[in-house]
Structures are given as C-alpha cells and as structure tokens.
Amino acid sequence: MKKTLGIGIISVILGMVLLAFCASDAFGLIFQKSNLDDLSYGTIEKGNVAQGEIKYVVAKLGTLEESRHLFFIPLGKRDTALYLIADNGGYVTIAVRSDVSVFDEIAAQTADYLAGRAEGTTSSHSFLGIAREISDEQLNILKGHFNEMNLNDNDWQYAVSSMVLEEYDLAMTVIELCICFGLILAGIVLLLISRRYRFGETVFVGEKAPEEEDKAEKKEETENSSSDEQ
Image 1 (cartoon, rainbow, N blue to C red):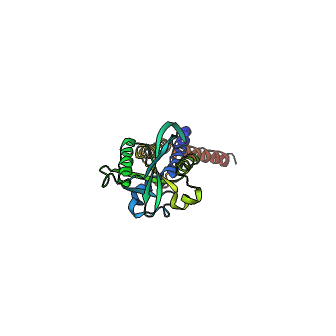
Image 2 (cartoon, rainbow, N blue to C red; image 1 turned 60 degrees about the vertical axis):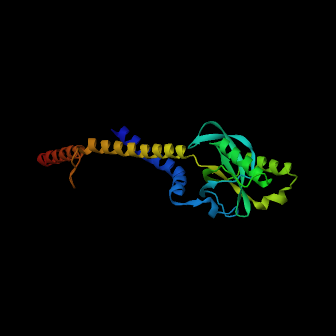
Image 3 (cartoon, rainbow, N blue to C red; image 1 turned 180 degrees about the vertical axis):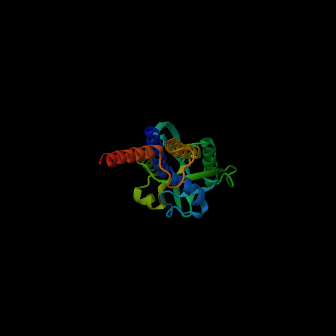
C-alpha cells in the first residue's frame, strides 16, 4: 500500500506542476480577454488574449510549418499562415491555422478596396489569439515582405508590433487542463484508498492505527514481563 501512497503523491504533484504551465493561458482566456479594437500595436504585451472580428487584412506575409505541442511534447507539424492587419495606427502580425482560405479571401478583398476597385470587404472572420514573442522564422518572413516593398528596417519596425497574435488553440488547452485535473483527481483517489486501507473506513480523533495498537500491546506485555521478573 506504500506504493499506492507514493503513486498518489507523485500524481498530485505532477498534475499541479503541469497545471502551472497551462493555467495562465486558460486564465487569460476567461478573465483577461480584450477586444482587438481596444488594443494598439504598441500596447500588446506577451500573454495578452485578444478577440475581434477581422474585416481587413493588409497583406498575406507567407506560410510556415510550426510544431504543435502537448505541454512540452511535440505532436507533429502544422501549416501556419501569417497575415498583417492594421491596428490603431500601426500593424500587427497574426498567425492563422484554421480557415486560411477565408483570410485569403479577406486579403484579396482588402487589396481591391485599397486599389479603389471596391467600396469595402464583404467577408469577415472572428479571431481569437494570444500574444507571443515573434519567432526568428516569423520575423524573417515579416522582413522579407517589407524588403519586397524596398523598405528598410528603420522604415517599418517602429510601426509594427514586436508581438505576434497566434490563433488560440482552444482544443489543445482543454486537453491539457483535462490531463492536469485528471492526474490530480487520480492522485487524490489513490491517497484516499491508501488512507482507508491503513486506518479503516472510519477514523476517530485520537484513535491509533492497528499496527500502532499492536506495538503498544507488545510494549505493555514486555513491561509487564519485566516487572514480574523483578
């Protein structure tokens, strides 16, 4: 039963450690979610969760392959498309992994609008993203876009956010939270089983465990034997 106790303790500790790594994203999604229109390109900070309806896409920067992780375990590669959107006087990069065709359509409609061929866009898409520090690969794609426009870094870097809004992977967050709480619950159950085995179903205050009572009886018998011999 000591094995059950040890496994229970390890399970609870492991669940709490993993929860510490994924709880911040879940907490931000529930309590610190901001409207994308209320943020500016210069105020977006790491960990900010932003949600909004995207009606205009300035440009599609390119695509790249990124790893999908469950905690720290890579689950394979997935395609990610990078887009540039205008946001309160500047520009923000967004990383989209689902409904890419819709964002491509919005980008094409935005190009027609900027060229005067249309009065606006007819398509839009809701976006939920979390701010991350832009990776080297993402930054290289961003630089390549502006290099094609013959713009130096000094011409655009102060008007573009240093963060990238990555599309929130809600399904993966739910799976991670389920694993965390599952480990914690399993550990608590094992601890209760271990305790019930050691002390019985009902434990009264001041009551000794069976092994403690046996030790006490043996000690009393030894003391009585010693006193009789004397």
